[in-house]
Amino acid sequence: MFNNNYSESTATVEVGETYEVRIEGIAREGDGIARVEGFVISVPLIQVDDIVNLKITRVLRKFAFGEKEE
Image (tube, rainbow, N blue to C red; front, side):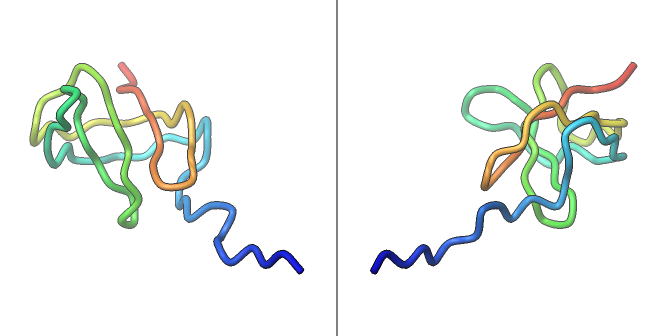
């Protein structure tokens, strides 16, 4: 019998939703890193300590992608 012991998703964000976040750091690839309730979001073209409204564009099991709203 197959036992699937992992959760489908631990996401605390949803595609299309907007969240106000502070950029906490920069990943190796150069994208900014933010968190919503501990869930990591990757954001391109942004600086550390920026506070922005972030729209979620894609959600994966362990992290999400977002873009800064103008």
